Length: 425
Image 1 (cartoon, rainbow, N blue to C red):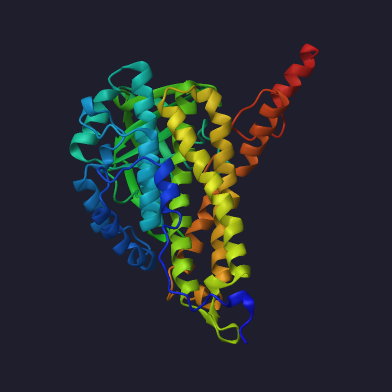
Image 2 (spheres, one colour):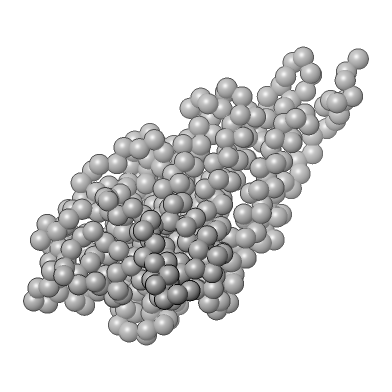
């Protein structure tokens, strides 16, 4: 006699709606911006990109043809006019299709989103840069990561010296996603002898700028996160579009940029998690445990293991989508920043843990490269390394909660607290 536990194994299988209805309820429909056939074309190149350790150029061309580089640029500047919520939904779809390409393109989206937020508030000539990116389909590599920077988003270890017509710059930026495929590179530099950070754009063929092939990682192998070298490279004044004191992170534009990155990158990894859950669902439905006369998906132990992590994923989905919508409705970047950083921080735990649970439920076959779960698990580990990283974010959130001065840079000495002590608080 079959145990009651599995007595329904012979019932006809009815394909349920699954979680798709949940996703459709909270995320905007972006099929007009990113058609399903384009997503399928991108997905087709993911495994090869991972194997070769290079971005899929065919996928990039598919997205260029759709006008993807100008996705967040206002329509009046010849862009797609997509909101932050729409950009997150699009990145989520790309993350499910090709995680490495999605996270690489997310760096472009962060730079362009930062420029859009700057233009909205300053209404300066930065519109020329945005219009060129949108109308010419230019891809921007974001070179904000540097050796020895410690994940800071408001400083630079590169020192730029004043020169006629701009600044001269020498040094390294790494890792820089899509560096070898991009048309432009967006980066920050600190003025020599001054406490000022500049953000600029340069063509990737600018004199003194070279890209060195150096990317060979465990996961996100198809992101093309190479090394950018500046050798006495001139950065013209007209290509500098943002200036701020070094270490200042209470600026509305910088806060908006961090929000863009926190939410769109989280959306990418939510797409990775969905792809992993979809793969696990198919694997569990086809994996029979003979002595129980049932497939794994029909057993409560496996359902519970998946259900625990699904709850955490759906909570993260809801928070990410809601905050993106609030930002698009004119929410204050400074007020929303702690919540957006909290979402990013939670994603660092929720997404890798969910994918690990899916692999474990599927058994040893999921550890094989014959299934996509192995690649998705590797790709998901990269979520831990995007700045602002855990050390600085947890300190920032703790200070906010305690009513203390907070900054996004890691600050072990806490000079702001020392100043408060001196004032007698």
